[in-house]
Image (cartoon, rainbow, N blue to C red; front, side, top):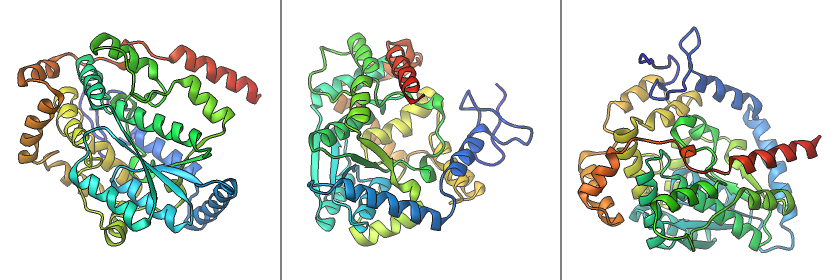
Length: 369
């Protein structure tokens, strides 16, 4: 494919599925515009929607210890969301999944959230030996979404904690303003509820059955959402959200400190986005992050292009991570280099829950009719 870059954002043909119109504008921009079109457009409408939603959550939380739960990582989105939940008067149980890769800044940011907002924190500490072996299995499988493991564990933990505490609402930090553009070819889209794919990769490349890792099957997801009526709400989509302004607020109110790139509060995420993705898969994830900010009017295209000229990760920090990450995983330098040299594979080259998922979706459509 001949190289081409979008005339509006900075997404390019590093996404093999990208499509451009006659004016050179990509499908990601058009998809983003469609999402915004369906969402509340102005701040007044957003405020009205937010007030209705908060009132509903409070009503359903009467007689319970908590109105809702929310995950925290120490990053911008989750920290700002937690702060806003407090301002809205919601009684929130915050949940953190410790996968063994937290940076010192992330730990301190979470401590500040708890102490300054006076919130209860539930921490799920993953079994390190099991998680380490599972991450190695994913690296050996050569699939693109190494982060699927942590994302799945977080989602499963939130669902389990909500069910155990009879909490109906899970509030997360996902939002159009900073995450509205991310190609399907750069991730495994079904990762949150596909325990089959995780088990298949672990069976082929791992060591032993998974005993402690939080798994969420599509069947349990259907039970929790359809029978227990647990809902996942992207609250930041119904309030004005500007990333730079959010950083100023949480820095001032919570003593939050910046850690660099998006999701760099995690060492493994920093290494994954700063080294594994660009070197093995030819992907600079900043293109999606910056394109989202362009589409949401938070930065200009020229500013984004200037940002791309900078190294994905500082040379000294990359050198440090190249030593630290393989060693922490228990891999020699040669073993890690051999893994990096393996041919990339699709997640669906290993078993998935697609048949079960398709069946449940078809049944759901029939019941709706």
